[in-house]
Image 1 (cartoon, protein in one colour):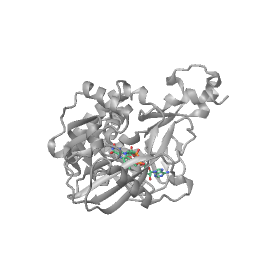
Image 2 (cartoon, protein in one colour; image 1 turned 135 degrees about the vertical axis):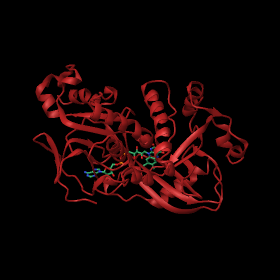
Image 3 (cartoon, helix red, strand yellow; image 1 turned 90 degrees about the vertical axis):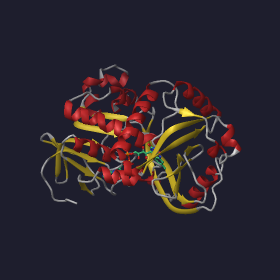
Image 4 (cartoon, rainbow, N blue to C red; image 1 turned 120 degrees about the vertical axis):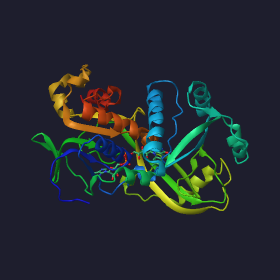
Length: 380
Ligand SMILES: Cc1cc2nc3c(=O)[nH]c(=O)nc-3n(C[C@H](O)[C@H](O)[C@H](O)COP(=O)(O)OP(=O)(O)OC[C@H]3O[C@@H](n4cnc5c(N)ncnc54)[C@H](O)[C@@H]3O)c2cc1C
């Protein structure tokens, strides 16, 4: 673990969750010299807690659906090709847990190009009446990755620095983090404090809890219903997880009630199927950060102070071409993937790589600057 290397890097990445690790891997593969920083270690935030399913997002037609669908296809290919030892490919059953979701499932079935079929008998006999009688879709191919394993594998050979970054300094054309410096900075810090005055970036953290259990019940496919229940890459281990606790924040100073979290997960799992002889072997918890409009973020960050100085009438609703905003130089944020960080990471990292190596413009729809004009209008 190098801690005294001072030579300039091409890119410094802050945050070693799935986004930071996947960027480090992709950029290093493209020949860039990368430094990766995290205050707590590889996959120690939301990514370490994730069930890490590579599941399609069941959503209605629109931009979000198109991006998620492309990301899902790319992710399946990416993990099975590059990290087969950390990827378990299994069929996937998605059961709606509300009437509203039931409608989405039914319309998704008619629109999707993904291969799906009737639920096989061996799975039907495991399911509760509630699960059997709810709208559902059974995909022939889904996948789950070993969250920590894949992040560690992605960062093999990458210079990693266990540093808590307090301040971002840009001077003489490079970003300086302690002794390290690089022309480009990637900020992939999930739901943690933002490090820059970028209040306009609409993100919220949602707490999640996953348990790994041993059980006498054999689970032949990945199940998403009230919670996710799935075999894992570890023989005999089943993961149960969810990110539905919107009320708890680790930054509040309150303690999270792990026992209660476990009971809720097991109780919700029992609505899908009966699990026999359960032995809980591990808990994983963390925050995932979702954007206010559910689209992920990939792009430059607007310097709010300088932009408002340049265009003070933004406060009164003046429309300014986003290309004219003032941006922090050579800084890209990746964030807001919600419950789909593992699905989206290869897609986002690939586009960041194309931008840094070939100058290919990143999709403005994903730019964090999309939140800026609305926020600026509220500053009057
Ligand atoms: C229970 C649970 C289940 C989930 N299931 C799935 C799933 O099945 N499929 C899926 O695709 N997604 C799932 N997700 C969502 C997924 O985990 C997130 O979208 C993903 O982890 C986001 O990754 P990230 O790299 O952006 O953030 P994080 O993993 O949170 O990483 C951010 C990192 O930045 C570091 N950091 C922050 N600030 C600083 C600083 N100042 N200095 C140094 N380091 C810093 C943190 O230590 C952290 O390691 C789940 C999430 C949870 C919680």
